[in-house]
Length: 177
Image 1: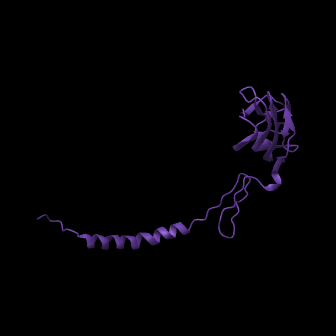
Image 2 (image 1 turned 180 degrees about the horizontal axis):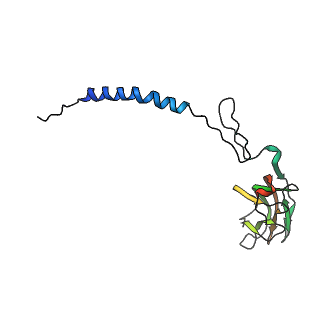
Image 3 (image 1 turned 120 degrees about the horizontal axis):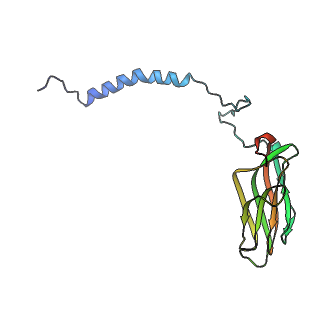
């Protein structure tokens, strides 16, 4: 028999409980002694609800930018559908393209979206199989610089109407076009 004594199951349980009684209060004290604030770059502290939930929104409702029908675009037409307010930029979150005419579906019959000062810088395109709604969600969003807009262009036999949504941001927060 060696010089070490054997500790049986109940002995290890007693040791575990003793260590837990010493360590647990220290851990609990350390966890409750730290307060954390979430602050943005301008020093504004994040809000918390009465039920201790962090309030998070992408944008305040007064910064929303919407455009309803956006006109009816057909036969190689190019039309502005949404733009940021004067002196602001915006983040485009979604565009719904309502295809209401598409007499000869195919690859040359489509609708495209552009950001800029006209139909030059394309960022999305749809070749619809027929008539109906085409939904374009953009996450985290498409930056639209101040002085620029979102445009739609229809090709071939496609005719569309658009509905778009985004929110305004300071002009300096979006890259210049």
